[in-house]
Length: 218
Image (cartoon, rainbow, N blue to C red):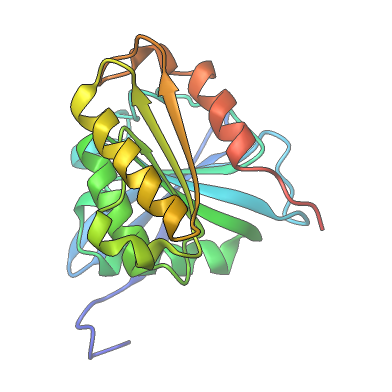
């Protein structure tokens, strides 16, 4: 137990959900129970390594409340999808989650994804754990210009609607700075899209993510 951090990081397997390659763990962070759902590829095998995407979901600890873009039963891709409210929790909880993933799964790159306001948290988390998180995806979202250097070795993907003027301009400015700093970045502008980008829910979004989170084989 790390007394300096004053936090109890206790993981316990709570349930193995039937009819899917999903499991729920419970993270005890400073006495608060944080459920985390880990969705595995349909053909998952412990002998292979997989990319990981940490996304929002399970609002207020509700296991039925999946991310609106993933749905309650997200498509099983060739990467591990993690759903939780981790974006809004104490940042030390992120370290505990990453420790768990490192301990129980063979992983390659780890990405964190944020939607709208959650994207601000995603970029902040990625800047703190830049030695453990390989990439960050904002939909819409972009890094704080003042902290660009903290994303130097990370892959940045910004997705924004064409009609979402404020976020689009922010993303375009961020892209210029990222390019000037030699950072790996990509900006996807959805034609005719607004802020919510419902048109990317489900298969459309997974198609973009599949290209970004390429499966690495041993």
